[in-house]
Image (cartoon, rainbow, N blue to C red; front, top):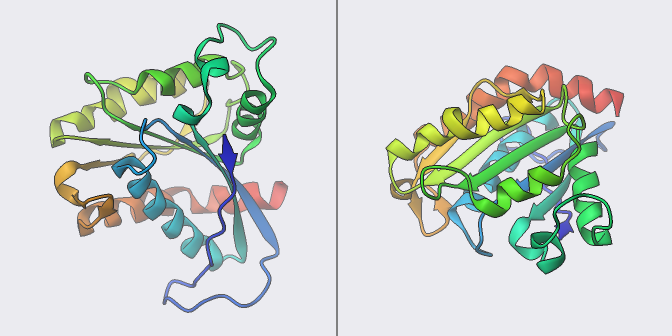
Length: 208
């Protein structure tokens, strides 16, 4: 299931932007968590808020599509191939394939990404993510789970020939109060990840 969320853009100094943005960046989030409220989406929310703030300085807005894989239901979990898939699942796949930026986020299970998260990308067209910026994000019980970013997620998107953002983002359970991200170090890493590709994202927004 997909949904759109709007983030009120603010400048780097925290002032709300009142002018109408001239451009929009289509951002798709694939959330691999099996829970409605999760630390993974708590982390993604901070990524989206930071992205909206930094793009506001460039007069670029965000158009967000979010895919919660656990909501896609039995027509998704039982699908072995793209042909004949339910319309809502097809819509979710197309939103991801047509996005200017993909945020791929998952909790760590058994040392890797969630099974439904991988199943979703098993249905994505092999060449649809080529040259697409992909920001990798993950949550886990401890810092050792951060290895999932380089050992599982980056190789997966390497298969798709995607442009994975050089700085990936990980947060452990101790970085949260419930689902609220608290640790300044993680906030700083999110800013670093976006700073590295902000020029590319503005260019993509102009082209869309």
